[in-house]
Length: 252
Length: 310
Image (cartoon, rainbow over all chains, first blue to last red; front, side, top):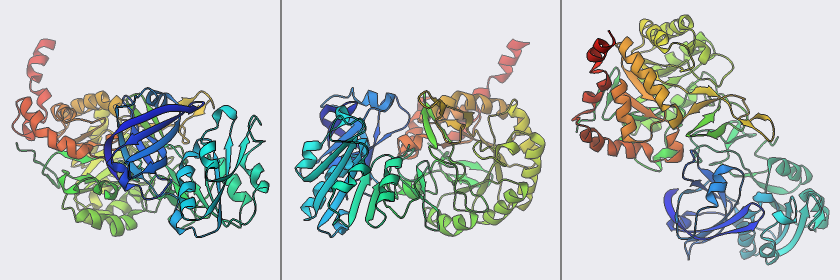
């Protein structure tokens, strides 16, 4: 893990309260797997903000982040301009182990701001010869993003809670539309969504990426823990995760 | 520049150490710098059995600081002795064990078990985030004395008592600790606080209340150390909102003999190392040639100011 001032190459709004940030720096070489995150310092705010890595390109030393404005910190982040530097700590945590997934077909299930890390995950899977079907859920049409990018990788089913785009309902409502020949699913979104997904797919091998308010982001402060089924009884989301096997963690 | 400080049980090459709970047991920070650069390390609290801590969210940002309610999550004293202390020992730096408990018996058992593996104990009678024990011992001088006496009796190393700022009279608590046999004080723990989310109308932190730390509490800690320094003769390890070498100097001047850096480790994992590197320049800028020279420096004109008051 590194602490680096990365240069902002691109910063634009891609959906309601949702912004895309392209950063350049050496830290990109340290990314091991899709689904890892970076911890961003924002001037005037005491704690860093964890943001998942949506895409990365070691050859160009760039990574793409997509974040949602959730409060004053992320709102202040939207004011940072192209050419400026951003204090980034990362890459953190364990991502989706795409190289270990040897299958013909995998299912991606993303909800809201849980969608971004699944983009590079889906890309890696496709590169490895795994066909990818994606279910992407958003609150409403204005909140949707990355749809064309996912469509370029495979079949996409979109759900919105208000029915303004795709199927009306939640991501789990789209599960019957997907051919059942996948053995693995990879999911990221709010914990309630992850729980619903895991409950619907007990027979599949699942990987879940979790989010939580973080302190240090490196495993030292024990702010972002989730109950686990091993003898230790807990996992730290920032360093043991954010990606876990579905059966490892207790979702509530 | 002489940065060394000698305290009961602790030969510090410099006065800066990470604060308990903000550094776990060092492993995570060892990937960023060589831990032997630290003056010492204060480990995360140890209880008798492993503790899972509170529900999440456990942290919330505040203006110039943060609230936390981790709830003393730790693997238990035996696991700390077997799995964590050996790693820190490799770095050849003084190790301070933060000892917590729900009952006097638990404090005594943990202290008795761990003291021979470390250089000093920081007795945590001030954690605001657990339902039993913790701060109840730290807000009542009689209870504090009882637990301190018992722990001092069984410990083979000096005991520093970590004081809670959530009291009416910090001097009374400091004097109680000194009378009960503490070799030093560690001050301050976090201040109890709360944030409420307007959307849910509920506290942001699952525990409801949390401990406030960070730059926001520094003036309170400085004031309390300034008061306590005049009342006791035992040394003080100062903490609360330290982010720069100048903050360290302020603590030394108030009366701290050493300092601990807490939440700032979360913003900047290199903070302890950077502050240690900056400290010599800062001391010399203000006319000091050693750390010891600065300790209690704010009290030198006490006679004159008291004359003015009379």
